[in-house]
Image 1 (cartoon, one colour):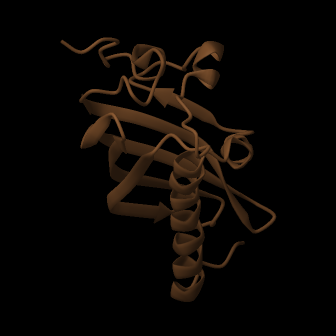
Image 2: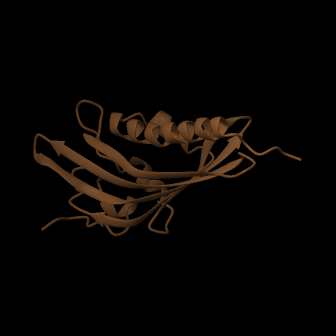
Length: 158
C-alpha cells in the first residue's frame, strides 16, 4: 500500500510542474526549439481540439535575434497532483504578447492551457497540453499561417 504524500512532497511536485510550465514559455520566447521538442517528446500538443499538422512545426516566424519576439505569460495557475504522485493536471490562463520594429507591442493571443503530467522515476514530464477558449488577435507577425497552429486564428488581418 502506498502511503499518502506529505505536504512537502506535494509542494515540491507542484513547484517542479510549475517550472515545466514556465520552461515552455521561456523555450518558445527565446527560440529554443530543442528544449520545446524535449518538453513534448512524449506528449500531445492540441490546439482547439486539433493536433497541429507537421507543417506547423516550422510555422513560427523567427527574427534576426533568433527569437519570435514574443512573451508567453501564464497566470491563474492551478495544479492538482494525484495521491500516488504519478499523475497531475494543471490549468492556467495564457496571454501572448508580441512587438517588433514593424508591429507595435500588443496581446496577440489569450486562452487556457489544460495540462497533464506524468511522474517517471521522480521526474515530472508533460503528457498533454491542450489549448482551449482561444481569443486571437493579429498573429501574422508570429506565425506564417496562423490557422495551422491555432485553428480559429485569422491568416490575414484587415
